[in-house]
Length: 106
Image 1 (tube, rainbow, N blue to C red):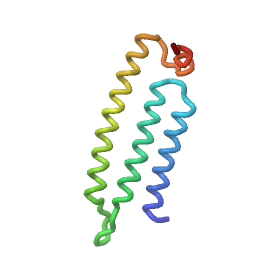
Image 2 (image 1 turned 90 degrees about the horizontal axis):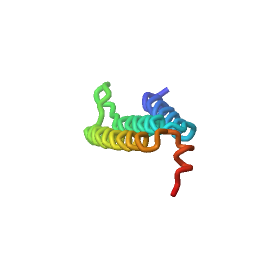
Image 3 (image 1 turned 45 degrees about the vertical axis):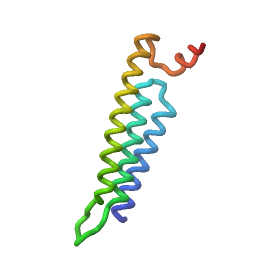
Image 4 (image 1 turned 180 degrees about the vertical axis):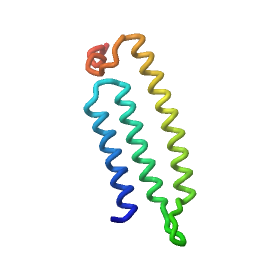
């Protein structure tokens, strides 16, 4: 098995676990964690696409490293914003259950 295939398989597993977490969970915090797991899978795909074999050693392209660093920073900002919104939702409605929040429409 090729190293690229192993990394792509791991990234696919992370993305599927994150999608499962988003689709099956009702707690808003668990949904945000699922989104972050998907982000980790995507970052692994970006890094895997930048792998190069140079003189019998693996190197990662600088563009892939830069894209991953930017993706990590954006993911951290999105997670912080989402958790701040979740705190405000909990203070106002006293629940994080999406089914109960769905009933609170206008």
